Image (cartoon, rainbow, N blue to C red):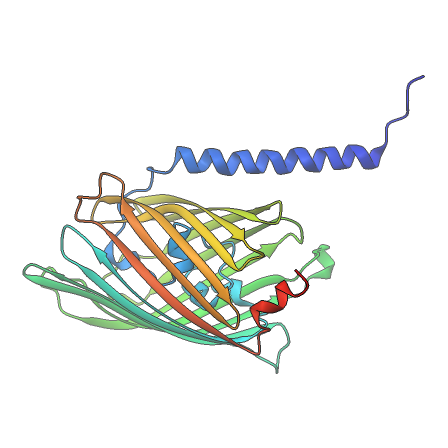
Length: 320
């Protein structure tokens, strides 16, 4: 005798099929586009070793202080006050690049669900006959906006940065200053996936290519592996950045890899490692030139964060 169909089981099978399809989609995108990104410019370099280790695929997460440089919405509802510092160095056919950055974020108690912060980043390159530099100071605000009328399980995160900029493009051009604006939204499904959108680099005529649109999606597979994919576009340029993050030892360690950002025409592979010794978090990342280790390319970045009031990491291992 034929058994009646169980709608609950049918729904479970459909969700399982959807999860599997998303995993294969991210994997296919990583393989297909690992060398598809076009050459990026010196002024596209942004701080954050976690984002660097994931190949810049960070618009759908951006939940730590340096996330304000990728999608300012990701910091909404921050649980702790946090301060971060990072420094790094790149090799390039046109000359070495060095950068340093700091970021500070904290919950804003006057408006529950909101976060305020500030950041500073400085990038410089010494090339034969000319020097380039780019400095920016950010003031940040983000908010988790409840929208029950749209049947959202979680609030929609929105955020913005107001920037003070100073840039020296090189090629005999002098230094210019101006103002800038970033804005973003991040949607959390309440399940395994998130999506983000950011409008970046709305600057007041300091001679840099603007604006830039960034779309990102991330999928959490089996609570341990996160697949992420970012699409970054502006006039005359479109780049795709896939990345992966894997949790190890109950999130004590995180391994990362992705497609590194190009610099002066050199394609790169990104690798990273995170160590969560809460309340201290250490992140490191490096890029390796795809066309051989003997190329004048590649780089590294290291960052250190402190979360005020965060529980100690060893509490996860009590009883084991």
